[in-house]
Image (cartoon, rainbow, N blue to C red):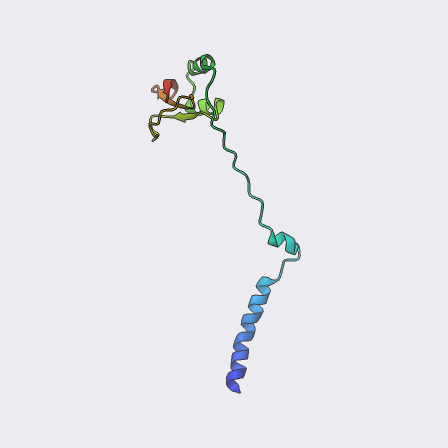
Length: 112
């Protein structure tokens, strides 16, 4: 009989511990606890191509930074000399390999 009493005394605090963890806080409803928090959607720019080459070349003539080029043409893949890239050939003007001057500004490049 003492073994039975001992096992009950050991199991009782464990059961109380588990039921406390399952109780819901007063400020939250069970529905709020069951549904996951909404996640922020990551919006990536769509891959676009440069169609107006005269306007693009005029912008490059202003010697923008690579960041300014990416901001002006968000769908254009701007590849700087320090980046690794595949050498696939694209005919749609969607990837531009830039040439930089000593200040890190774009002075030209080529579409590939």
